[in-house]
Image (cartoon, rainbow, N blue to C red; front, side, top):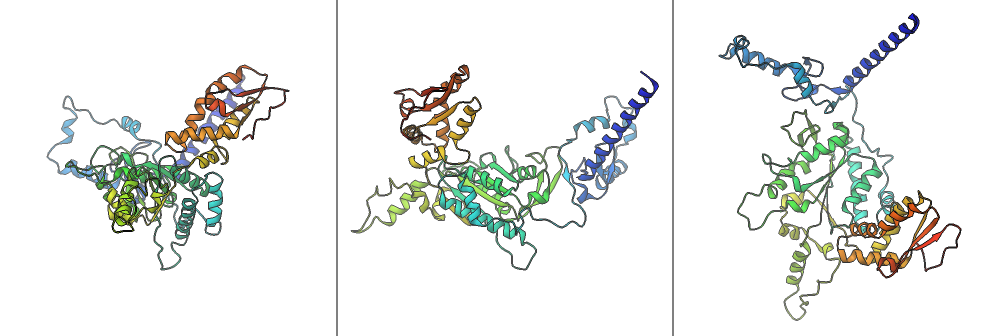
Length: 477
């Protein structure tokens, strides 16, 4: 190697080191420092004292340490010579500090910018039209959600415009399993491009017990917003399985995951400053804490509420069971829209406390799925299950078709499983297994048609080789 080449290599290494230092500096400029002892961010404590590369301590904690050393009865200088006493190595601390759990800095003098601009906010009919592309049926639910979300983001955008404060429109959606509760919320958040946290109420417990604290739902939203507090304060939190925190009946034990969780969530739903850990579910983890205001966070709660229909039937038959015009006791047994007759009183009888229901002013129901709706779900949405399989086989240059009879047979089998739209995928997976296994073996196959006979185990699929004419069997999907 010549002397010139050697010098060039050294210059490249130096330039790379400078670039790395600049990147680290930019990273430090973007995120706040957090006290290693009390975990408060720099915006709360003031300027930090840098002990090592990644360890900072606030003035308060440093002062308390000095005070303890001066005023305490122990002479700390003597401890150095005692056997068995080991002092903390700063390099060990540096390895313990979580690197990714940092808080974004708020720029001085910068105004809060709404995530959804009021001028570009889509009108309710446009939000519903976008939902229609992905979600089949549930017209009432889509209409209610479109209006509620539209009003919520108008409220966020006009937060500082005048003295009239608009109340928050939190929602409670009730519907049987597989009716599309979670799917509706996911689609909505994707369309609006706002932070969304989907969490489960089953793991929540009262403070001090093993399980997730109530504040963990806000912590998940903060993570979804990239640890940006301002962004998180305008997001959406969907709490699924909300019926699992209903008040337990006939129990003498402490109800740590029922009524007490509902009580703990009251302030959260209404709007308050909540101290949440960054990047963890527990406040006891060695992570920084930050304060999030939930006043502008939209809460959507959803649950299947099993046996709620029985409570509604009891109320309706009690109302109409006296006199000559009394209804028969089994009048509501086959009513598929029974959940739409739900009242706050029914939910209270189920085990939800009135204060909790009062903070969810919009209550609406989703219908159970019928056979016709299941057929529509199979083929109509933008990312329908059949379209997914057709795309998979198209990658092998094979066309996939389903006859109308096959679709109807799949829907009938799904109805028997009684798990809503979730049953469709399980049934199709079962029948497509052999086809997906055999097709890559034979390059001569050009088309596969799934028939009703194949679904009902009375026949097989029709395989068409490349160059052959496709047989006509009813209508194709």
